[in-house]
Amino acid sequence: MYSYKEQIEHITDWFPKDSPEAIELYDTLMKRWREEILNKYEESIPKPKVDYDNEKRIAYQELVDIQSKIDDLKKNGKTEWWLREIIIKQAEDRYLKPAISKYKKLKFLQAKENGKISKQFIDKDTIINNVKISDILGEPREKSQSRCKYGCPLHQEDTPSFVWYKNTNTFYCFGCHEGGNVITLYMKLNKCDFKTAIKELSLML
Ligand SMILES: [Zn+2]
Image 1 (tube, helix red, strand yellow):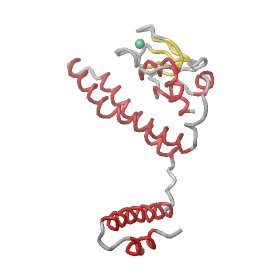
Image 2 (tube, protein in one colour):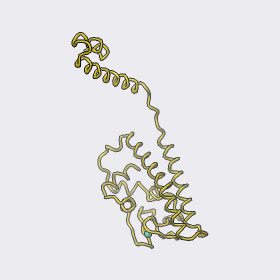
Image 3 (cartoon, rainbow, N blue to C red):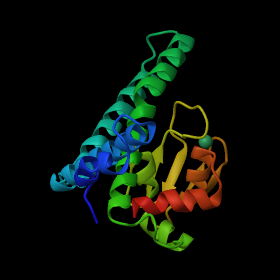
Image 4 (cartoon, rainbow, N blue to C red):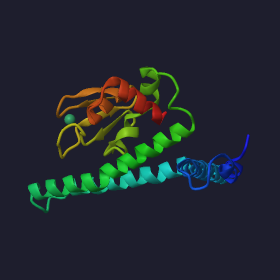
């Protein structure tokens, strides 16, 4: 088996110089040779290992900071309510959503690197027992031993009426009367089906 370099050197043995066949073969071989060199070069560079746990911690903190700034905005009664709504909406679109997707992406990349993605179906009880509602909603507004309160992510409100029951990892909102577990919450928040919710939540295990 000749190397691409050797084949290129022998083109004129097989085809007349400057013939269309020679030119075409030369182009093809040069292209493959270049690819071969690039591949070898890429393999030779050790890939830096990403410290996902640290990256995720930073991204999560960023997320919590943004969320608390937005919560402050919600509490700030100095501006007109409609102006406040606009500012909050803008802050959510500009800062919160990118921060959430950055965090999710890190989780996804880490799971992919650990080969978790290809893992077979994870059952719903494993998710409910291991992914806390606080993993999704972050820091609660009010904490106690068995229950925590959040501003409901499913309806607009000022006083928190969304209760997370820690022992069962379930929730109920006394404002909009929505309730369920971490999976149904995820489905409602992301407008996705059960299967997608399980798949994505399993990345948080
Ligand atoms: Zn609610």
